[in-house]
Image (cartoon, rainbow, N blue to C red; front, top):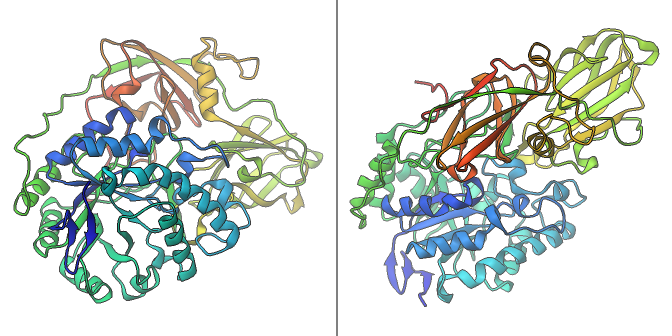
Length: 590
């Protein structure tokens, strides 16, 4: 067994001064069959530690339905870190931010009565249940029990949100009572206000920043007068949002800041070493006056790109680390070019016209009230006396396609601050609403999704709504299992090509492979929608960019026949899909 503790000036590993040189890999953003590869490459860059958040809503999307299998097998991830001869840092939140939907908090929690991120008893009761489950996994894997875990973080950048010391004390008590004996840390941006509000005297304070290292370390030292200095989030890149650009950072500047940190004797966690992918519907969003949902790729301009290949930053960081610590001589193998394929797409019919379900309600029912975890809800209402006019909705979260009697009228976008549009006379008004990603930062956590508040036409209230949840993954699975595209009579059958291009339409393509391989689905075939390969939910695509590819991890492919399913929401632009040779993350600011 090995000890790990905090000394007067350094971390102490087995009683000797130790500089933590860590990198972040989120197990929930990487296919589990690729965890070992990413961890090994971290060691080859010279890292001695891997850090990960724990995403509560990945493990328990519905109350009481806990999952720690497959991609949620945190224990296996920590064991693989140990097998590579590395240490681990675990950051279980419960709030993680991470540009992950709802900041990692389950919607069943944020939709409840408890006051989030506080000492509210109801909230703490749920948090306690969650943390005890996590620590059942983490506690036996601590370094002093023969495992890999050397540090556990309490909450996450709490000083930017609140100052409830009773809350932090409760988290510490829960953590220690669950058998966590390694040092406990907090992280905050290096400002006096945040560092003072986000921690306790009993916790070791660390900072989060990506530049001006000497200045930020000085601020941190003023609040943490003893023990090692640590940047627990050294931001080496940034995330992207739909409609923006692909963010990159200057390699030499990032390397120089990393060198300054290590030269100062500080420990570091590089955020991110490997960003991975927001597979499925897991992307978060930010709203600081304008709602901006995060893209599917979480490449982050990290040392390993989204597909796990070393970048120029990998080798620059490796050279820096070699000045301060031993670095293996071995280098990662040069990545091979991905197979280039063209896949004809055949129509599988409209896919959002499932029969309306549920009782009539005076107002539209939110995603949250429906307990709906997927991306879409369709709202249908009869127009009084068949009248048209100006449709006015209190708020749409987040994007709505409006039609009357099946004919498209227009869209309402939260990002554009849309509230109204003119509709023609007709019988049935249908509004298809997409949850584009839950806000992951600040006080908008847990906000409801769907049509929020009342809707009127020329000032006359619309009542008698049917709110129909659409599970996009289930629909894709039904389509993939049926050549006709219809399942149990619930989906409309195939349409001719010229009738299926406009409006929500499903498409299927088959392709053969002689071996599993990473693929890059080029998304220029469509406008906006969702893509699946062999049932694996790749995520969202959108012509709004910047991202122009969806990453297909090799374990999602197979020898022989493979099936691609596209659920297009607006307009198909080509009747074939292409797999390209590499990632295309879009235009940069340069």
